[in-house]
Image (cartoon, rainbow, N blue to C red; front, side, top):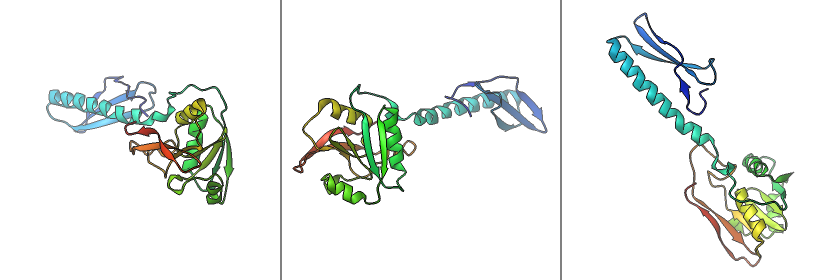
Length: 208
């Protein structure tokens, strides 16, 4: 598989056989990966020009998928060296929760994963407003973290230590950590909330 869109045209490789022109090029990192562009034989000069154009288009088309595979959530924007032990309650059948926990681990959190059958009871226990609920509920340093909250926002919360109950990303917006689907990214907000029911925007993500 071509890595990072870097190709090296490694050989001749123009062959005319059985009225077909083959242009073969190889991956810069592996001679075992190869791709062939097949063109009908005609004017050889035009064939070569067409082949070069197609090769350029092919190389350009490789750049987008490679960039898309690098998750924006891998980057760290908050430095934090305090408590990183977090307990996550989730449904046994929830796969996106696993993706979010992997995101936390990548940022240095030590995750205790607890599979709970009655998630509704857990949310009620920690006084989560219904409009702020999501799939999983986590606890860290006295704060409640609900849903797919980015790791850097949790770090900021732990550094600033505001008088809050916790943070939430309501529902499950596509594009949030653990909810990545290709290049699709929905705008979302991280909401801070208090025991008295007051809540406000902690951080908003429109383009990320």
